[in-house]
Length: 100
Image 1: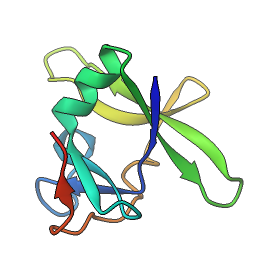
Image 2: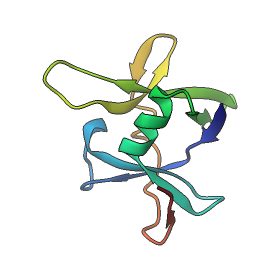
Image 3: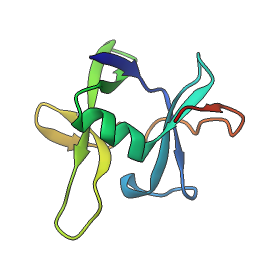
């Protein structure tokens, strides 16, 4: 299984919550992947996604969250607790290459 680091996100609009994150990205590779594709890869156990907590250099898992009546979305999961670590990432540049 591929393990892919995420260090930026793209949202449908500024300030949007987890449900409106549209892409995950990595600035070192100048690329981004649509969230629906990332969800497919996680569910199919093809890839896992994580972000790094800079102070501790600890990997934080990005997992698929599904709430009743809502479409699945991605959120950071630390010790079984859903967190806002993903929302704290900067926006990806619009010029980043799109991976499908």
